[in-house]
Image 1 (tube, helix red, strand yellow):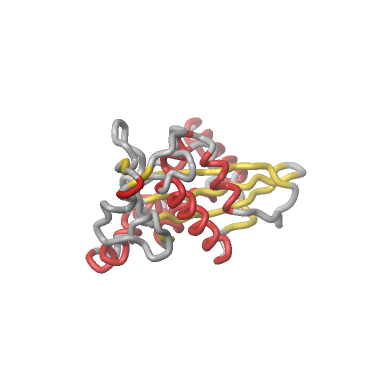
Image 2: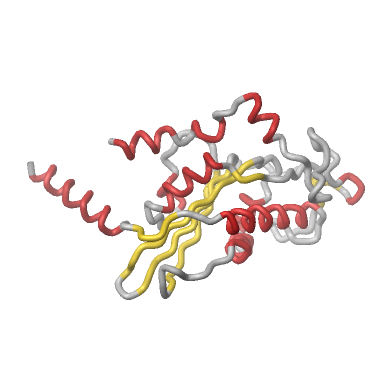
Length: 223
């Protein structure tokens, strides 16, 4: 009985601790996230920016990535848990990558720029590797803010359809003449250093791909 009581107190205190007042991302920020991540990938692929190891290397198979409603839904659920580490939302089914950003802000209506968040992620080797995995085709992000004494805590989370793999390079290294030459679906029309995405073909073959990995989270929240 005592254990049950203590567990109940823990659950209540946790939910109170993570009561968010601002939730979600507007279309303007969706566009900025997509543009900033693809711009970074394009510049790394063309050796205009250093990669996650600080080296300038061309990429033969870096593809463009697009926004996923399914992944953004999972990321939003994660943001509303007030994550303090990558492990907070790692209990979902599926092989996916997670990046998160946490900061203290003065008000719940604070302005924020996805481009600045991507730049901060780029400064960390592990985070930067996630951003330059060549075969990422989709990602989605979520945002939440909670009151913390006289200030606010902001949580931004992004989910990617692939995560870094130990011992595996994130992309195929190329030379200047073979940039984007290993593209299965041809070169992107928007970014000269990136491959066209396989997303449209994948969606036709398996339209539920981007939502399946979040079934376990939805089930756990319903219990």
